[in-house]
Length: 418
Ligand SMILES: CC(=O)N[C@H]1[C@@H](OP(=O)(O)OP(=O)(O)OC[C@H]2O[C@@H](n3ccc(=O)[nH]c3=O)[C@H](O)[C@@H]2O)O[C@H](CO)[C@@H](O)[C@@H]1O
Ligand SMILES: C=C(OP(=O)(O)O)C(=O)O
Image (cartoon, rainbow, N blue to C red; front, side, top):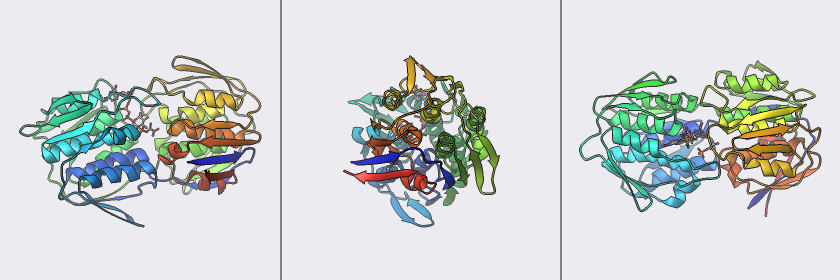
């Protein structure tokens, strides 16, 4: 298992190419199963979640060709099967193949994910969506078994909350249903809008993407298509934090300012200077990070996927910050590890009170999930001395060449295979 060894204290300065968004790529790979025509996806990040999702669809017989220009998926002939517990447990986004498999085979069987490090993460909304469109859904022996008897029928779907994944399931299933589907309380995340862009290129007719009310005209006539995934706003936000926490300057090449408004606003309150560059967004840190209060919210609010990274910065701020996590009930696994570096954090349910300190000190720490791990990398970049981070496979799920991108900006970081 690899470890990261980081010696903190270097000011980062340079340009980081932001990869395609993992959370846009995963549903697009699942969407390739909807159609018998080929789908070319470009700008997929080279991260293990993407590899695993491609692995899942290839188990069903999808043909996959990859080269420097992109990934071509041909799902013209598929064979039925089931997605097992081990796969779904490791990568919860694998639930996204449920709707496409149901529409292709008339039935599908995908393991229930169970809980994970950041929370219980139920999939009840995904199941309700499919039921609303006329499928019969049951849970048997830990598996979701869905079948659609005849055909799915368009319906009015009111989501209990703006779930990203359930909106994506609804969009994919509704494209194959007879008639119109109205999705209310739909998630507005850029990754959902990008899935709509991909489905539209494939032949779907969808209106209202990016709003809470999305209309899908079903019975899509699929066609061969090509789609370029959006840049990863969470990766970009993470490198913006790297610039800030080291008092440096990083150009986030390819990043889109419009996807990062709430994050950039918080960074500016904490002392960053941010401006649009020729190739993306430039973030300039400051001498002393200012404290800030943050509450995670669905898009366009502050994203839960950047909460841990902001907390690393708050640990070194000039005062106390209050960080509220409202999306996942257990997304504070980084707190005890940050404390090992000397951070002063008091947890009370979904609220963390972070009292800024002048200094963090390197220590051995353990990565527990994707964003918790990268928060430890950020803290280590600013800490005095060496930090060793174990279980970096969590980072590989969503960050392409993290150590290389950071060392190109001047970080003292090395990856060691043990
Ligand atoms: C692959 C992917 O895109 N992952 C992102 C996606 O996850 P994911 O799609 O799993 O997140 P959701 O938006 O669905 O979850 C939001 C909230 O709804 C709850 N919920 C969700 C579905 C359901 O059937 N029942 C239910 O109760 C969840 O437990 C959570 O409390 O959006 C999250 C919220 O922005 C991000 O943190 C994840 O990085
Ligand atoms: C929580 C995340 O991913 P997933 O939903 O795939 O677990 C994430 O990207 O931070």
